[in-house]
Image 1: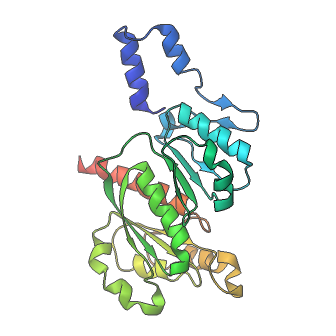
Image 2: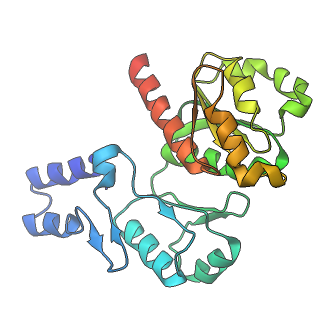
Image 3: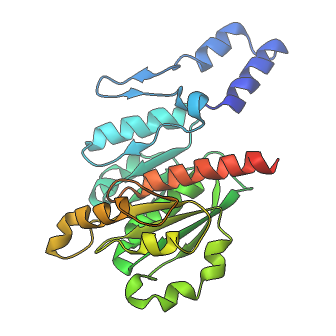
Length: 255
């Protein structure tokens, strides 16, 4: 439930289109629903504008189904991240209608509310093809929340001309997400070319000395380019969420 839905319910009560008992029934799961193994935070979208997002890894099939159905019944859009294909197949038959699973980003989306007018402009840049799963997670997350996205994939520093060829696209963005593994250098390069904020996402892609993304993480944290902020390794969702919040601030300033 978000602020708009709550306002509609309260207005319906005021207009006597709903009885107090019907309103109580609709608000019964606020602020959270106790499923024993999980306490679903239906109040979260009222506090910060975002419904609870489900981290798919480490949960059983029954737990995933119960959580997804709880969010769905409360009229929330649903986003599940890090849901591997085998786990998706195990729960596929018990999911609500309209689920979209993406086997590249390992995300599951159920959108009950159509976001036709997406805001802002997030450009998502990935260094290599192997970084695409995290880049797609960032893209889908940003679009799920309501941001407009554009992607530039496989433009890493080993062939810097591929990035420079798209410099106008970069400079038109309100916020840029840069996804890179290996040496993580792409975030600093992009940060030095643009005035918009850059969100760096290190990935676990790389040979042994990359230490499953630690090398890229440290490089991004030590970036000499101004305006670069770094999220955790393989955290495409976190980057998409932050980028959308920046977009929201930009929309407020435009109005």
